Length: 218
Image 1 (cartoon, rainbow, N blue to C red):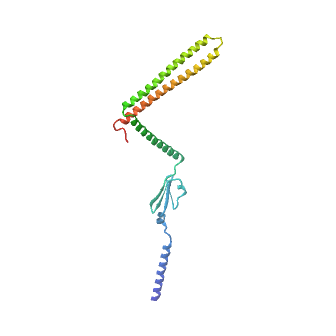
Image 2: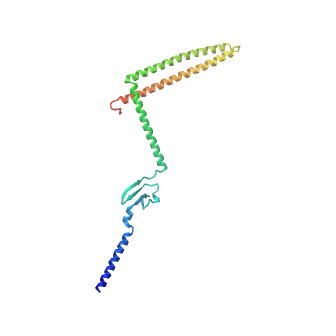
Image 3: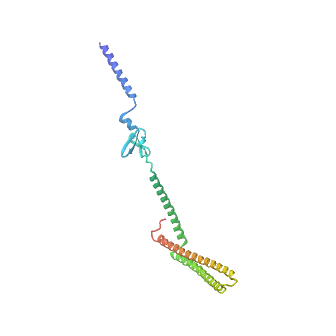
């Protein structure tokens, strides 16, 4: 009787061991299994999870967690409008960078060209005086052409209806062309003088700015 009881207890214990081994052989599931590797994103304010990246997360910002710790983060893909805005911002930033470089080079050249504000003013006055002289010479030539054309015109009136006016008419046409060219040359020199004065005025303002105390940062 005693022996039979011992054998039954042994059989029971062996069964417990077998069941325990079988349970241990199954993969981990439940809460621990879900936390091993989780992909998640947010769609319309609602979280979406998955053991692999859910299709709802494609193109959106998503994260990958291992045992509850974020190991990877993907930013959302920009929309076409956002991409365009980013490209425009990048272009503006690049233009600003190039402009800053150009400005710095111009300032360096300005300081190298003029030892002082007085030197700048002297060069301005000298170059404008040279243009004034050239304009004056062109105006003298213009007056000469005007007088010559007037003489030809008076001669044409005198010979009205007589022979020889064809050559005189050609001379008048040529005089008109010369006068027109002279006036174009005068206008160009005047524009050149105006542009020169504006450039020197701008250089002078900038020279004052960059030479004022604490204004220039190298």
